Amino acid sequence: MDPFSKTIGHKTARQVFLRMIENNRLPHAILLVGPKYVGKTHLVTELIQHLFNTSRHPSLISDVSLLTREIDQKTSKKKSAISVKQVRALVERLSMTPMEGNWKVAFIQEADRLSIGAANALLKTLEEPKGNSLIILRASSIESVLPTIVSRCQIFRLSPIAKLEISQALQKRGLSKTEADEISERSLGCPGIAIRFIQDSEMRARKETAIVQVETLMSASLPEQFRSVFELIPKTEVDKSVALSRLLDDWSEVLRAQMLKTISTKHSFNFFTRGFDNSSWRWLFSTRR
Image 1 (tube, rainbow, N blue to C red):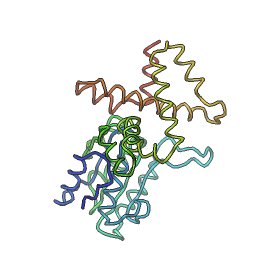
Image 2: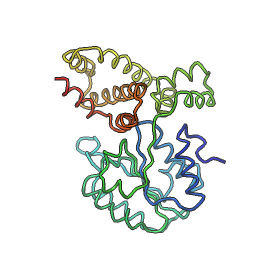
Image 3: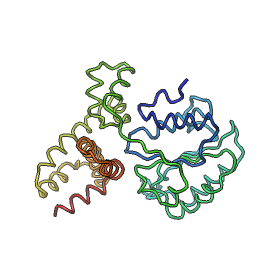
Image 4: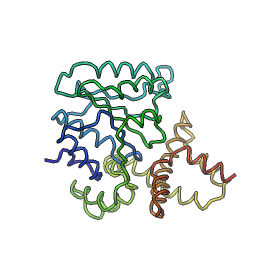
C-alpha cells in the first residue's frame, strides 16, 4: 500500500522517499521547498506516519517534535524568529532514546525563520546526527534559508500541480467533474488551496476576489495601485499590517500562477516558483516609481 496515497501530486518526491525508506537510506536532514499550500506539510505528515506505522497526527507522536515560532505573551503575536533556546531544546529531545519506535523526528515548519544563533545551534546536529534521527525543514524557497543549513540537507523542490491532476483527485473525493474543474482552476496549482476551497467558504471567496483584484491592478496606474491597496484593507482591522500581509499573500499566489502560464524558460520558471512573495510585490511597486 502506498503510504502517500492521500497526497495530491508530487509523484517523484513520493517515489524517492519510498525508495530511500525501502533501502534504509533516508537522509538525516531534508529540506522541502515550494509555494504555500503546495503540499509540503501533507507530504511530511504522511512520511512521519509511515515511519511510525500510525495514522495519528505527528503532534500526537511522542518521538516527533514540531518546531515553529513562539507566541509573544505581551503582543499575542508570533515572534519574528525561532530562538536559540527553542533549537537547543529540540536538539536535546533528538538525543533522547526513542519511546515508540526506532526514530526521533523534528519538523521545523519555518526554516526561513531560524535566527542566526538558532541556525548555528542546529548545525552540529545536522553534521553529526545521533542514531535514527530525522530533521525535516520546510520553507517557501531555498534562498530564504541560510546557506549553511541548506548545504547540509537533501533538497526536495515541490512545484505547483497540474490542474487536471488536482481535478481528478477532487473527483475521487466525491466532487462532480464540473465543481472539481472549477476548484482546480482556482487553486493555482496548490492542492492545499483546493482542499481549503472545499472546507472553508470564507477562504474560497477571498481567493476568488484576489484573482479579480490582481487583474484590475495590473491594468491600473501606479497611483491607482497604491490607492486600491489602502482601500482594500478592512477599516475595522485592528492590525492593518496583518491584513495587508494577507492581502499581498493572496495576490502573490495569483500572480505566480499567471506568470507560470506564460513562462517557457527554465531560468524564469525557477525564479518565479521559488522567489515571488510579499517582498517581491514591494520590489515591483518600487521599480514602477
